Image (cartoon, rainbow over all chains, first blue to last red; front, side):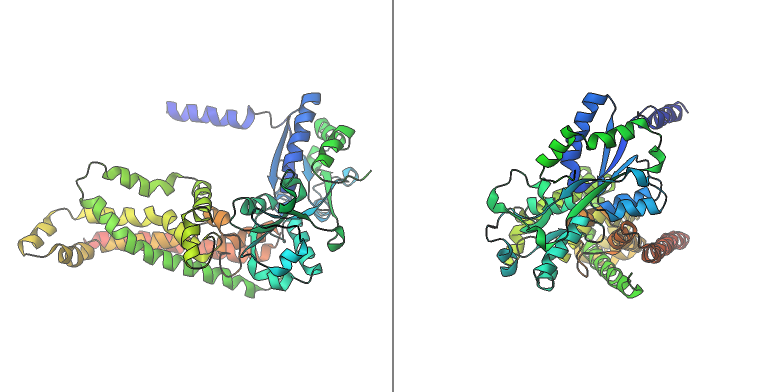
Length: 247
Length: 226
């Protein structure tokens, strides 16, 4: 009996004692993990409001949002998903903006990628990692790149799919796949030979949109964080990670 | 977006994985269960605990270690090189290995319980009739422990069908090779293709219910017989 009471007290506290209510809960596409953490850190220092980012593939996060997940802001890796959230009545149309334009890179821990697309054409690897194209925009972009190069059919049997771009990166980083398409932001600081920045004419630019979710419409801190994303100090961080921003 | 026909490969793959895993587990698990049931060794409960670990561990822990172990820098990579590969991750064989570890307690525990349940007596009788140890095991212990084997096989099979976290981490989602049922459902849900998700998830619900119900009925019947 006593035990149950204690358990209940702990539970009640777990639900209400955290500051989830005051904090800004942000659903962040996996390619943006590092910059999101840094921007959140800076926002917390200046605004004294906590930011709690949750990471996943854009598709996965959208599914959660359409099921009323407790998020205030959606930082997607594409433009379609925020649009879908708006269309389904879960997001605020007027808050929509492009916070970053991402780049796809080919990354390998073991192969020399100086020859760029030739490495793909030669196909001297067993496995190539991509993010699941049906739920991760960077995976869809990777597919586009291979199709532009006319190599999609040839490489298809070698695909291994990460659930999001973070897992895809991890597949290559652990060496389980020799090569993979990831986001530029994930491979900063890697040697120049281990990455190939895919030319922009091979895929349509990955415009990543941010949107305020309906349930946070009157939440001051959430609006403040969105505004902060457009500030020069946030843009500096975002660009540091290899993204472009649109004025 | 896509037809119902594409639902079949993950189902087929899952059934294949679960069948092979169950057979391997009966082969590997029976001697372990026998030893755990009969041995006087003081540290045998430590072995039992190791076997039972997957009951408690998050699948991500197992998935993480497996990913490293199966990879090119682990023993899995070494084995893969014998067959001209470089990693056992993202292979069907890798999934089988992971599933055997992951479902082991569900097979070993019921068989061990069954071995322990009939006690010393039948084996002593067999010994007085000059049965050889192997003969004793095969013609006395195994038939007596039949309910345990049945429960173990059903649970091991069902648990492998229901595996998700480990496969997510070491599978790589390759259609026809590592994209099992649970992963396919997860994908359909995330991609908002809920018709397909409903078909597969509903099927799983029905399957799981039937499995649990039949184990319960089976145990009841066996108990009545005994």
